[in-house]
Amino acid sequence: SSTEEPELRSPILCILGHVDTGKTSLLDKIRSTNVQGGEARGITQQIGASFIPVENIRDQAKDLAERLKFEFKLPGLLLIDTPGHESFNNLRSRGSGLCDLAILVIDIMHGLEAQTIESINLLRMRKTPFIVALNKVDRIYEWRPCRNVDIRESLKVQSRHAAQEFDSRVKDTVAQLAVQELNASLYWKNPDHRKYVSLVPTSAVTGEGIPDLMVLATQLMQKIMAEKVTYRDELQCTILEVKTIEGLGATVDAVLVNGVLSEGDKIVVSGFGAPIVSTIRSLLTPPPLRETRVKTQLIPNKSVKASMGVKIVAPGLEKAVPGTSLLVCTEDDDLEDLKAQAQSEIDSVLNDVETSGVGVSVQASTLGSLEAFISFLKKIKVPVANVAIGPIHKKNVMACSIMREKDPKYAIMLAFDVKIEESAQQAANDMKITIMSEDTIYLFEKRLEDHFNAIKE
Ligand code: GDP
Ligand code: MG
Image 1 (cartoon, rainbow, N blue to C red):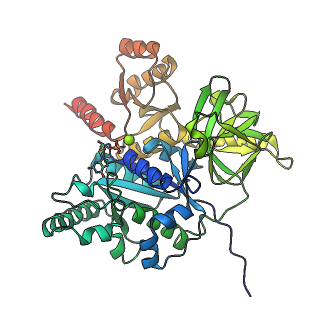
Image 2 (cartoon, helix red, strand yellow):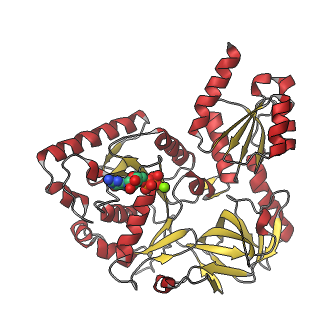
Image 3 (tube, rainbow, N blue to C red):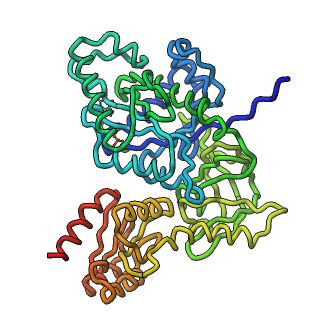
């Protein structure tokens, strides 16, 4: 007897990696090659994400897919538009990652860099599977560019020199990944996708390897993670950004991972201070690409179905916390239960502090980045006593200052990608509290090391 095939949703893909490895360029290249060849089949722009329909991937990678005898089943891929750690960190729900597959970009000419390793740690923390785009192959000496072709076709026409350099750089990267305790292999030689990370050589300039990247992502999701991308009715929606927009008021940009959202839905969101209860006034998405020649405003939808990037307009959302879940209160739900659930999501991270009460004070802009930051500090064995989300206020500095008596070496504030209020800085100066401010996690490591060393001396 034939059983009905389960409905699959588009997997959510994030791009991570060190600065200047080509994350934005790859994203642009993926989008532009998909826009070419007919607008009707083109990608759909969503809020914070681009949807690449499977028809496009099939077209773009025809030869490759035929060679692989690959049958496409997914509706497409949903690519998060802002590459980097912040969106990845906020794609979370109760500590788990909501990014289905990540693309870790490594510059083939540079190998692993500081933020590559930071990315690997974040991916591990969220248990997110990933593939590596080994980007900028076109920069290999004497490389003969072959536009938009799959990488093995391109490798066939390279000179002996270029091929040798390519091989040796791949080997170097594999060795560097081994130091990070990762087995890696060129994707077409990968003996086991569950044990080896696949490397896909790419160029965001010539488009080489882009078909491979898309096909491999689709293939992995279908073959190994089909269950994960089986569509579920149970709502799963996470807030990536909070924005106040003229004429609309408070809005949140959210990714709907499973389920349906409708205009008029009663929602519960984690807020700074207290949970927010509101009603969806509108669900906005960009107009189809065809219409974007004239700058059109966002269009309202009666309802949207996962997976999807959407802008939600609802009163009171200015205090929503990015990196938390959006809940819908149906007739069957108890509002107080949902409020408690929303609050506990924040509390679970905020309460993850040293019970002895001795440690540094940390602050980050979103729940997702705070969680990642705390996990990093645990790894480097720096105890944390105070945590908060949002800009540093005077009261946060006051809380930190208590540590001067308990253990002065911990009387420091770590400001991860947050603003420091002038009055807070002033208070810190007066009380001789150091505020270390950085917008990437790895930069704290050296500064903390220096700080603790200076105290020892
Ligand atoms: P990001 O910081 O990771 O987003 O990197 P960008 O996409 O901004 O790229 C950084 C620089 O590298 C830019 O000057 C790009 O034009 C260049 N670049 C990106 N990808 C490639 C590539 O595949 N080949 C070459 N030759 N240059 C690239
Ligand atoms: Mg960029």
